[in-house]
Length: 296
Image (cartoon, rainbow, N blue to C red):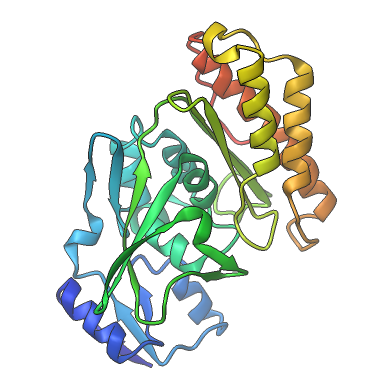
């Protein structure tokens, strides 16, 4: 295994163009596990740790441009107001040591359905900035995941940053695991209220071949909130609406049985998390001051 260590972004792109099979490594929290267990043996490793710009972020008027290697710890400490859902998801990532190393770019590059950042990114709405020596492009998050651990990157492209919409309403994230730390998600759920557009977006992790949105649940809830005048009145969402939303979210899941949980349990848990996170975010939107956070 050869080790490529570019000193700049331009050198990294050139190396990736010359060696398209090279596996990028920054935090290494996913790649090194696969290598250590001999699940992967790439011909080349492309070390991106010398490229400082990948660990930088910039908050604009409407979006945050988050470098691919910004550690989860920095997101938790510095971007909680702008990206509350992603900050909550970051809290659930493994251990403090891994949160200090890992970043969103690694989750996206690996494209595992169990990646903790995916539900929050889907719920918030974002675009993935990728680049090669041929140029750069923005990939909408809804088009990024193409299969089990597969993404829309071309062989010569690298993830440079993620452009995430700043929160204009409450966001929540919930994760089920077999213990409280250092655990791969049995399933996870993210939700974001977008009062400016009067819409709700969701994200489901570890309950389908790829990270997904519960689109039927979103469409139902968006119509129910609009038709019932909930956005203006901020009245309590009725139990029947919350139940239907949860049932549709559960129905969006397409999980498997594995050592962490059964398919039926995952579907059930997704519904529970959908109902709870909807309640938490709506109570926050209503201005009650409730900011319940936690793992379902």
